[in-house]
Image (cartoon, rainbow over all chains, first blue to last red; front, top):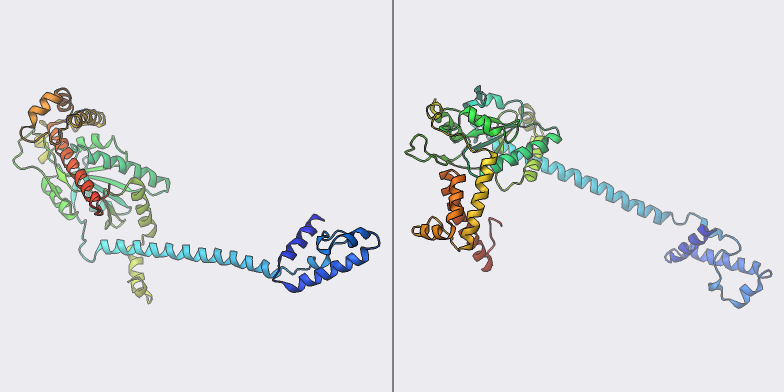
Amino acid sequence: MLNQRLSAALSVSRVFRAAPLRSFTLSSRLQQKSAAPETPELSSKKPLSRIAVGVNTPPKATATPSGSLEFASWKAIVLLLVTGGGFTWFFSREKRRLAIQKEAEANRGVGKPLIGGPFNLVDHNGNTFTEEKLKGKFSLVYFGFTHCPDICPDELDKMGLMLDELKKDNINLQPIFITCDPARDSPEIIKEYLSEFHEDLIGLTGEYNEIKSVCKRYRVYFSTPPDLKPGQDYLVDHSIFFYLMDPEGNFIDALGRQYEADGAVAKIKEHVASYLPADQRQQKKEAWYGFLFK
Amino acid sequence: MTWLNFKEEQTDAPNRSARKQCWESRDLFFACLDKSKIENSLAPGADKQVASACAKPLKAFERDCASSWVKYFQEKRYVDIKKERMIQDMKSKGIEVPFGK
């Protein structure tokens, strides 16, 4: 009963739909007339408009599915929003993925790599470590030195946070620390130093010329003060970046100090998600629709 | 190999607790410099002022940090002060600061 009243009230409010409204008014008037003998006070004392709708018999006209147009329109709006939103989300995601792929591809360079390349160093356990070991997984390379006063420890702590955060998403980077201070940083010293930061960190050192060469290849500026006496305390100036290398050992991005751990993690995730192996990249370029990615 | 030659003379790199100790002493020393309104503690002639105002925290700072760090942190402090002043100056003139803060 309450439902019927409610629907009747609703249909009255639908002013723009004239036909059902008219039929409803007519039928209710008819009902009033036929009901008059039993309840004379209703028809004689109160104006028609004041008589509660559907008092005696349910107004049949309102029960007809006359509201189907409105019903369809809210459905249509929801459908539009959902599909529109879906498409927007999908295309913006695809656009971002392509942008990231393009950025990585530009950084990989053609022919000779812009950043990175062969090196021959020694890890913190005294084993040889070359660029070959960058293959098969994403690596994050950081240059620093163990006597670094404040920035390197901060950055290495940040790197530890990033590694743990990425592990939650099953992304296992190979974190690499390369010293710019081979004179003081022996494998043992690096091992002890890195053990305080993250257990996955691989520390690399080597002969001065090897370090100089790897720094040059990674475009790392570093300078040791000239005329050093053995045992003298000094600092090494160096540039501060995390280098993200893809599983082929190619450089794909440099993350500077402007990135907090969260931002760097988000960027790395994007790179990992949009990474395509070399053969697939080539295939895509050569396909008939390859012009789309240029 | 180069590092082997130096190894005997070298002390190990400061570990986490040594760094923390050094940073704490540094902060105490710098707080004293701030209070005494000394901006460039390495400026020629500033040493007397530093010695009279902050002798004790300076001694602790030098004890807890390697000599290269002592120099580095003081230089950095002065650079940061100048940088902050420049940013404030640019902001007051309505220039957009490109390097944040």
